[in-house]
Image 1 (tube, one colour):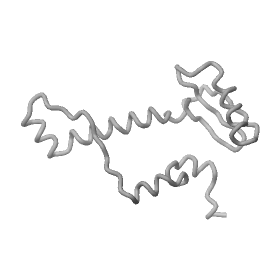
Image 2 (cartoon, one colour):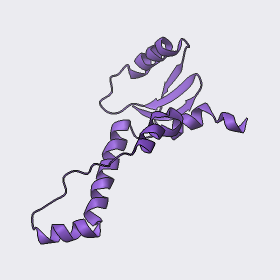
Image 3 (tube, helix red, strand yellow):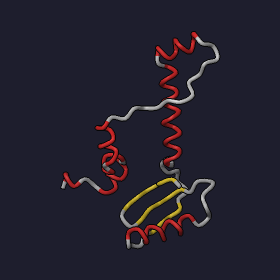
Image 4 (cartoon, one colour):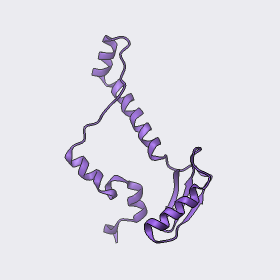
Length: 120
């Protein structure tokens, strides 16, 4: 499912084509179970944010595109006809890992939805 809108107690989603018919009801039940609060889950016709899988696929495609256009890689590909870039892996530093483990840093939408206490 794709997130369309979030506010405390209410979430609007756009189901993907392969989502179960009762995804909103199931999601609402899970949210009640996880949070102890009732949530109003609305199915929207608006196009929501990409799913996590869609974001990962787009990021990987961008990495491949960037790698192919890098001058060194482009020169190597030109020297070896038929060669291709099949995967790109990004090395993560300890600093990056620490930032990604903090949900307020790792997900800007979550940060926006929950608000920034520093501004209060």
